[in-house]
Image 1 (cartoon, one colour):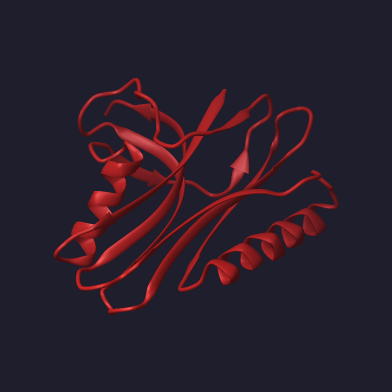
Image 2 (cartoon, one colour; image 1 turned 45 degrees about the horizontal axis):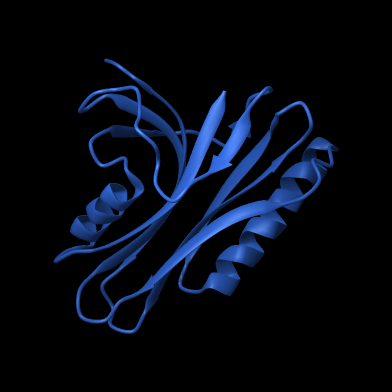
Length: 155
């Protein structure tokens, strides 16, 4: 299996509008998202992309994802979101997602959480990977997100 992971950001007249613009920026605006916990199945490849490639599905299908997103409408506040992962040679691993108002906070939270998850399981998956996205609110609401897409499924 391939899991594609991409950042997205958006601006809107409301925070929800900004979130939708970020979904569109990521390439997943026309699906119903189903958030998963953070386990990567064996024999998986995580592929970093700028935008999720064409998904085998149609308008309104279910889309299974691990996602971090953060919205704000406060002028000069930053919105940051990130997804981090570890994966071993068999292709199994773990995702974590964090959000906040600074890049440093999100990156540090991802690192600490992945270390916690590996410690809990007694497994060292090796190198920590992450994608982090951010945007500053000027005069309109903004949203930042990172999404790992597993697959689409019809109803």
